[in-house]
Image (cartoon, rainbow, N blue to C red; front, side):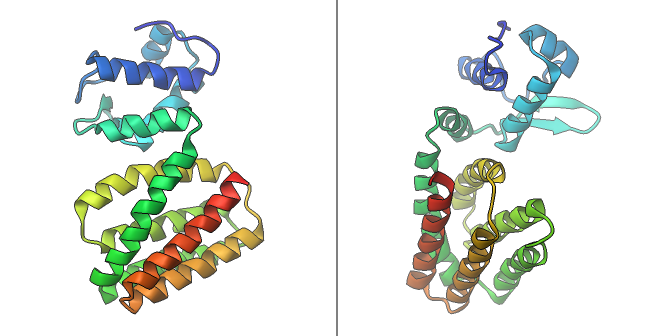
Length: 224
């Protein structure tokens, strides 16, 4: 493997993985060298390598198997690599635009297909958000992400789930690095409640409208 430029090490490591995967040098299911050896081969520090591996694992490019090591995912999707590329190009707004298109539709479908059980599964993370509003931003955001995942699952559409999940995980990683005022967090809870009410009423148009309202608010907060 080629030596990595020490500038922007994490980005450079991800770039290197993207190239190696695209060229077929690293293949699905292939086991990576141990962390120490891999860091030596790339001439990078272990902390920088760990950070890059965490990002790659987040979107499903690699998988860590307990007691066995780290592997290139068997079912690696080209979309995951493309999403990472967009993130590095500072084109997060394009990813968010895609998210708005997907999630407004997802909310509408969830309103059509969602069962009482699905509504209960949306309420659980919403309650977690309320519980940790003042005590833990990390747990609050975990509840936020789980709420949107519950909506995705309520669509009963594995294709949409496969498209939405890696995209959302990447965007949430970026959001976790932003500071959040209490006003923003409270508003997020209120908007989530509006979405659940619309889905519970099986009002597809209203559910999509409330989701778009929420995502427009989040986008304004993230990119102001």
